[in-house]
Length: 286
Image (tube, rainbow, N blue to C red; front, top):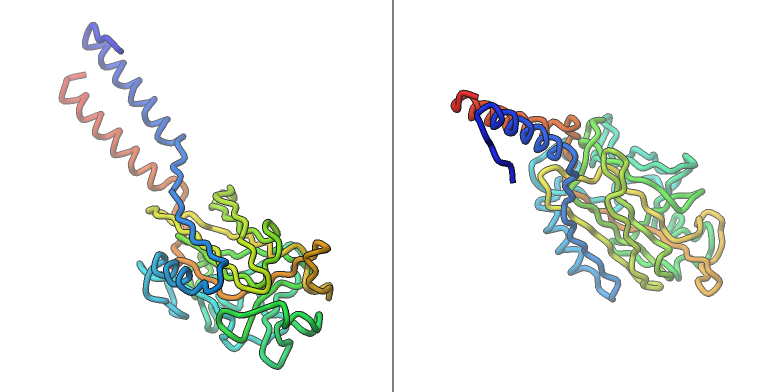
């Protein structure tokens, strides 16, 4: 307990307390509490619907953003040429569809979308793949080629302004081994927010989604490890020998919001706090 013996000591003590409090304000990293949606038990549609509702309605489709409410989603049925899909196909400002998602991988290699009759469920790599993979929204699936790891970065739809989202979810096909498929979330400072292993469901579908109830959407980048083997190698799915091929169906994410200036909200709040205390000191003649 601080004992104030005179006005001068009281003024110094209050100002010292002010400095300490503002310092703590800036140093505290407030963590949003996540809500996780996970399902790999037969029909996953109820869990997917609940996640869509948590992200918000409506589905904003290809409209230029941002909107205050709603979500975006990708089901790969937007007229994509199956081979070598452009990484910015879903956010090229020059033409729709503009949904605020851009893909990348460390090898700068191909992204591919399967199609019924053309590379049917990636049978051009291995003839047995259609027997392994199933779809949530038929007929198309998605995968990187040359790696099994890729990133999703977010932008204001129809713009190149970097953005964050409040939640992200994905449907995976044929996760055989628990731990082979992982969804990692990163903030604007490239700090890991959350790392999540996707539930296994051999020859079936697995869903993982996560949302954050926060004033500032925290997810800037998502890194996805889909299985443990690059499908482009042409190997057969063989979990008994440690080979787990996994591909992706639908993606869902909150409406992308522009990245705010670093610390702007904190600076504003702290500034109001300082002004309030200065006024109090002035009224007390200190």
